[in-house]
View 1 (cartoon, one colour):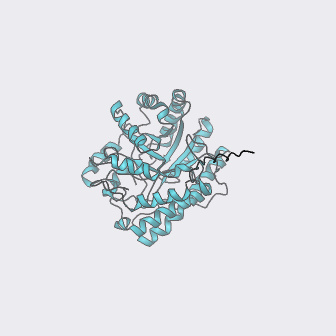
View 2: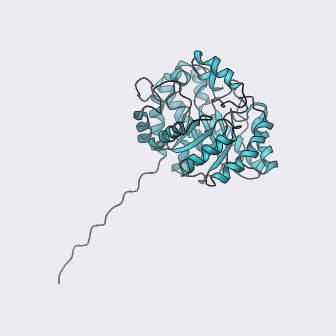
View 3: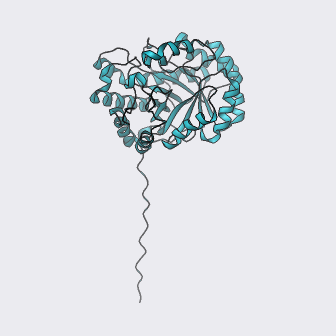
Length: 360
């Protein structure tokens, strides 16, 4: 569902009006009509690291599976303002933070967002929110330089009524320019609202870039498997991440003739406004989160970002932290525990004991 589906009602009129503008900021979320998982593809993603800073952890897990989002802020207390939240993310070992850099933001706003990522100990995944603003996008990539080496081009263009032709035209025009500015950075599309995208947007994008030869460095989509489901029905869908990821990776291979990293850059249980209250149940959200991440490992997902850290999304039900007191919620502890499960043990350096000298 689009971002305004996860906002307080008093903000809906503003966001709906803004989302009608093609030049406006792209919104965040998933479609209410969640696509059914497709038949799993036979091709599976490569289990080698290919993204800047990525590592391969235990059981073939990518280190970048353990990310979160810094979306637009709907509370004065949020991941950017509260250092306690940043410290907790660093302590847990979150490796990736996806941040929405607002269109035409001044450098102070850009700096605050990148510092939030750095203070959290994570790598940067920047969202280029307005694909039509070439001048600002070039400034953003130039300003961030080596501090951000991964970018998504737009956010859910399929849900934001940006046509496939519009998206491809902007992609083919801007991505080569952005790559010239930062040759070390990777650029990711099409960031669809689910694994298929409205009107088969994912397939259309892959066919379009295959024709233009302006290929993405990785492919991403969002996956909220539940919508007004019962608690048990939603929990049963926690294992669907493997299936949808393999569907996309198979499509990539079939159309482009090669494998690319595939990411799920927004995931959680339900995108409703607000989502069902069972998300506050510790037993449910712990099982859902651990099963979802295990499913991503099995599906060869290269990068993933829980939605979201702390912004009052879904009236706070999608947040990992309580924005009123900074306290971590059960989903934070579930992901923290999963990180500990997959992260390699630190290498302990043992200083050899010098031999005892002897005299004859």
